[in-house]
Image (cartoon, rainbow over all chains, first blue to last red; front, top):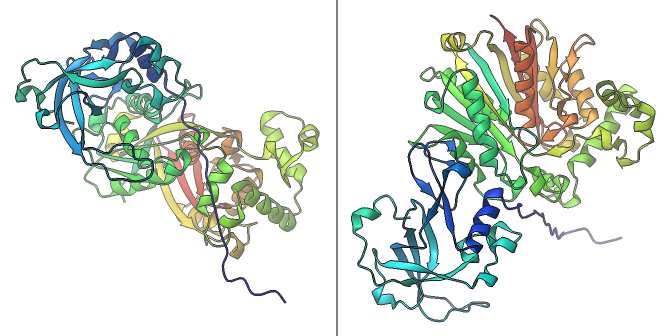
Length: 178
Length: 338
């Protein structure tokens, strides 16, 4: 007689498709490939959402191409974190580095997890003025990407560098920290 | 008990652009439902939504969907990880408290992001006995179909006739198709689609002001059978019978029943369980067998029942179901009074 079953392995998977990029994702990426950063300005409250979402979550109204505005490729560090990398398989970072949140001029939403290039950690501070370092046009993957996550700013902007301009006053950053 | 009515229902169009977000499917749908009765989001005292993270593989996805309801300044809201019909039940309970008069209910689902809904739904089963077998909802519905045919003497032809009667398709042609899982063929199984819908509930005199012919909730109740399908008679649905009794289906009968059946045998089980006679118009909308927007199908049944009231019927029911083999059932009886 067979031994009674005491253990049973149950390996399970569930598969999902990565959602198709939304029409707005695609448009945003196409514009990035041309060196333009676009957003939608809410017709009611005037806040600018970059990337465009197709609606203002505060006024709950839809926004469309007629609400499009161009946002500058320079802005201000609102807040930042200094990351001390733990070593694990696949970890490529060895030294401390900074991840910054940046408010672009003309936008009300921030870019998160931005990489600062050529700025010493000790010099990073809230109010620091920065500008985009664009990838060469031929390497801007957004317009040819097939996934939403290949269509963000990172598809065309490699990092951010200090401009040397005077700091942005703190008052300007109110309501725009994250 | 307060008198509470359903005054508006809106459903997202089926032809959404590729990559459309659930938030953008919901936003205009909610606006439309409220605008139908001259309301805005500011008038809503309580919001309740239904959806399920397992469908898209996301976490806390209902939070993004809330942006379609408008959650700033902060609003009182709740969410059920269930079909929107259960969100409607919660909103009805909330309106019974008496301090708010208007509730918004919405739900959405994008089953198209799961590679297989049959695979995804195995996660609703117990993790010890059934989930490891991969007992998907179509296979379970097929077992239910065998049980129904064994008890009632009905045949596969009877199943096909449910579809033929509504679509005009030829029964013999339907029966010539191969099985998906015997005794079920493609026509027996409601095709999963993406969807979103919104409903507005209003209490008492406010409903009378807003709407010429509100659909009053005469009774609403939901009940559950044991989770494990092996311990029940799958050819019957005791929880549906009980929910129907508590919702008062028997007190005057109904002219129309919108039943949340996504496979043909379920429709037979449900109609039996609710004691629906031959004079009752069952699923004039086509029901869940015509299209199955997961997490929305039940709420749409209640919305379709509302349309019947608006069209002049006086007593109808909307039913919603959840879980393997009709495990949980909700019955909502609506009455039209000018």
